[in-house]
Image 1 (cartoon, one colour):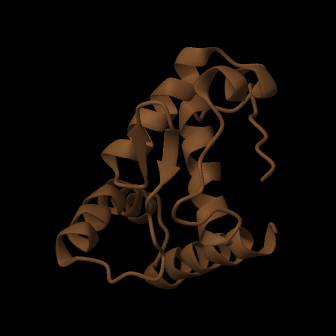
Image 2 (cartoon, rainbow, N blue to C red):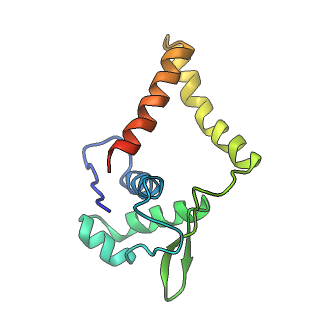
Length: 128
């Protein structure tokens, strides 16, 4: 799993890290039961502050992607083959809503928004 953070991006480093870990799960590079590097080791490898990695791990834990287990570390618990709950779908929809409204108010139509989403999904799978 190759993680690259862009210090020039407007996206916070912890969010970039969280997103790339989730993408690795989607692409099958990480599976349930796999452990992530320790906070200290990962921060050293990426050249970022330990608090950045810690914040990312806690965000992933809140989302049910990983579990932080004492003496074992951060363990992947997300299983892309499991059934998605309607509550989770509703939550994702709530997170999408502000972006979709922004796109609409800036003149995008439904088809353009669908195209953007489709292209993002395709790029996630292409980045193996």
